Length: 373
Image 1 (cartoon, one colour):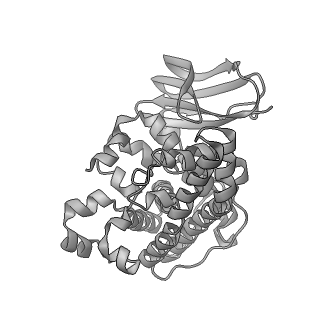
Image 2: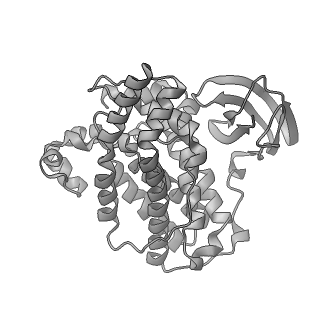
Image 3: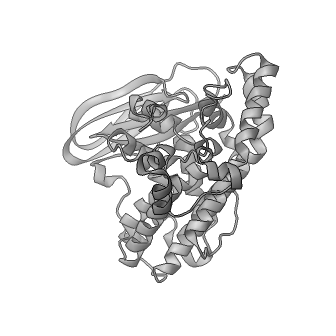
């Protein structure tokens, strides 16, 4: 693996999740958006099965910490291929690409489109076997890779502006700016389609989304010039002014693409139906469940409730800000089965977003916290 991606493995798993691709919140928006896009004939999947797809939207990022094969599935530096620079396309067959360029080169450039196909095929196989819980987890991974395919800086060698003197643009655009304007990135009702050729469909949106790479880099330069820095409200306001419209479109297209892939996979699997009550609690297999915090939005107090299913479990609850910095530790303990409540009085002024992260046995549950002015 090339040095440019080794940084991913030097970060804590929580920071990886908050700062990777569209971040935890962005991937939940894209995966969760399918509930208002799937056709009425698939309404039986809502909310039980679609909750699995949404809640596990960042599982693929978690795996980067323990699986060295995971990181290349999240990107493709497509402009490192001479044929792309010449024709705007590459060969869509992975074996052909390996024969042309060698396995190591192809892996170093990332295998996002082929990983997306693999997740789709796995989802379809599980639906056909009526293994809906497992199908939901593969659909969650599918949505994550689709979301990565709709983040333009996951499609270029200049993914962090390192070749244009704009180091850090990756995080500034996809994490910090999106965190500031996430309330303007909501998915709206849409329609999905049956996809005749899944692999071609995936490559088509990758080619289309690559066109925004230069737009992001130019917007970053313009915002930095106007603000005189890359950290101020003026910088991020200008960056959003130049990129907000197509960023909203990328989120919407991501949800629509995922819904279309799920709809297509369901048809290909024979259009089976399930009893939504037969689904397991999405997070119950971790032995502990972090319930939705309340009140949320909050002002000066917020309560966290955890339910422990196993006889005993070691866990921690920490609060992170939007940049991945630890704000405070709520709990770090071993407790027996039961339900426990923790009250937190944040020392903060004004509104904003933080994340509550429960870690137990190397697995993570994340809840977004919104603070009112």
